[in-house]
Amino acid sequence: MKRISIHGCSWTQGEWHQDGGYQLHGGVETYLTQAGHAVRNMGRAGDSNHRQIAKMRDLWQHGPRPDFSVVVLTDVCRDLEHRPAEEDETLEQYIQRQTQWYQTQIDQCERVLVVGGLLVIIEVMLQILGLEWRSAAFLLFAFFPIEFSTPYKELFFGQNFIMFFSYSFLHGNFFHMVINVAIFFALGKQIEEQLGSINLALIFISTAIAGAVAYQLFASGNAVPMVGASGSVFGFFGFLKGKELLYCVSNRLSILPFVNLVFGLVILHIILILLYPAIIPFQIGWHGHFGGFVFGLVLAGVIKR
Image (cartoon, rainbow, N blue to C red; front, side, top):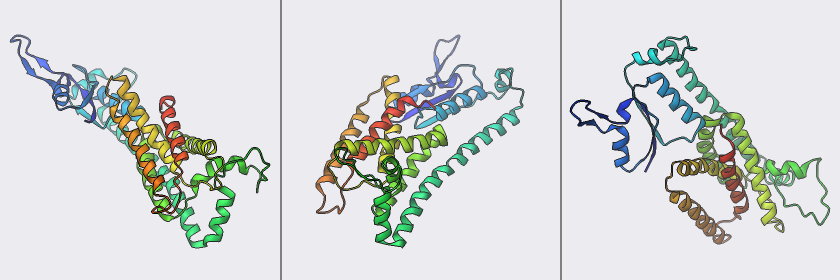
């Protein structure tokens, strides 16, 4: 089942012969619904391409984003007929403006590459510089659970605060970094297309902090530091799935796929934990994953744009 939005004129809704009383066609919505898809029909009889494309643009920009959008184009003369009075532009100018907007969305995604590229550069440098530099970086910027009962001397001013998000820029090894960066690109691009760079940075930093807070709460006695962007990656995942959950709830669709997803994540982490250290040589920071994912779900309901 796919989530599909439909935009256009009466061809999206179905039409009846005015005199004969028989149905001319069932409309795109009917056929897609019969195929088992979750359809959100935003079309309107007699509407223009201009207005319907604007609706589709707003849906994809502000969410909740569908898996696909179907646009039924109609008579181009309606674009001139239905254009708002304050917009004094020709069809050619409108098309040019729309093209520039899509290019802007593409350009914004380059900022995801900047952040992801920084994660790669840091790991490559640590690979080149060797174990001593990696150990020093971990000592300075990895997240160590704070023992509030015993005084802890910071190695530099503000370390106890900075490490709540600086740990996300370090990784245990090259393989660890590759996995996180690959998922970061895939999910981060979707978020930046919808919400822009500022919200992407906000989600990245806040879910990293949430992951550290969860590690502090559930692993306070653990002497092993936490590193990796997994908290933010799971935060991205939680945010996108949270948007899907809100879409299903608002449209009275089944939330069983979301429940199955959460159950699957729990089983996966249990398996990974049991495989340490026999097969997997490093501990899985499930605490950070959990904290990032949950806070991502929270942000899905808070961030509207």
